[in-house]
Amino acid sequence: MRLTDKARGIAAGRCLLTVLMIAAMLLSGCGDKTEYVLQASSLIESGEYEKAIEILDAAEKSGEDMRLVHRTRGIAQMGLSDYEAAEKEFVDSLSSNGGFVKDMDVDTSYYLAISQYRLGDIREANETYSAILALYPKESDAFYLRGRTYLAMQDTDNAKSDFDKAIRLSPDDPDLYIQIYEALSEAGLADDGQRYLKNAMELNTKLSYYQKGRLYYCMGEYEKAKESLELAVNEGNDSQTTLYLGRTYEALGDMNYAASLYRTYLETDPGNAQVLNQLGLCLMSLEDHAAALDAFNKGLETGDPAMDQSLRFNQIIACEYMGSFEKAKALMMEYLERYPADQEAVRENEFLSTR
Image (cartoon, rainbow, N blue to C red):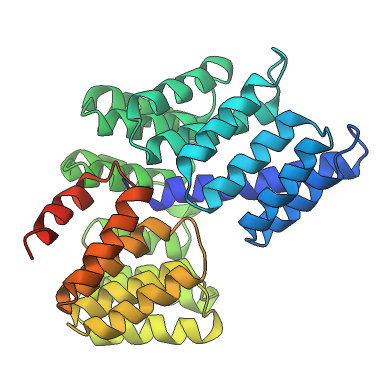
């Protein structure tokens, strides 16, 4: 089960926020014996998740705040894509609050829900978001993410209701409208999602060239999308602008130019897993499967947890196209150990078993 860019962004954003919150709290002198948690937080920020866990084991032995230890260890486990272990740590963190709910516990609950979702425990994730909203009824992110769980449970009415509540709380966030459309589109409800795109377009004076380009792309107006996104590049060529401009060229059938855009961007940011993944997908369309596999492998080498699942799945597909079925089977076994709830992968594994 894969998260959308919005869900990934929320997870990544909360991870950074958590690291900064913990660091600020510890550096300000709040609490005793918290130096190990601070060290672990710094390691997480730099992507050194296994080292962080080792430090947190030392934190536990030395008697540091177990609410923080469990929470920080859970974030490190998420970085390693071990969502089962992460879920346990977040539950233990919440159980260590002594009955007093704090802001950090709400943030921990978001992590818990994301871990549950990644494990395929959709109903549990839904209940966790509901618990957040019971305490903080103005959490737009919680309404959006709970709406996604309703979609996964095929409860379209409640999903739309939650999406509308999220919009009412964040009416000027064009990215939210787009992500709601994308969630509905993934669920086969693209027509229902069109109204969100149209409403976002009404924010015209508040839209950047990049946001307009994304909206046009989602609406299938690719020439207008290209025009807006090329203007956005002139404002500052970040990874998201490159991704959407490249996807626009792909939609227009110019795969070679799209691939060149991704490659040019990677010259200055070679460790961007999302762009490497998109380059690989583009090269797959060009039937250059060996080069695509190389892009997916490089993406995995970055250690970006947000892209791990997509890159691993695409790696398997590239091996299949190359006829490397034994390699694909081995990779699939590893994949399903990490992501057992991915039904698309389960079906793909059934196909592989016949090869």
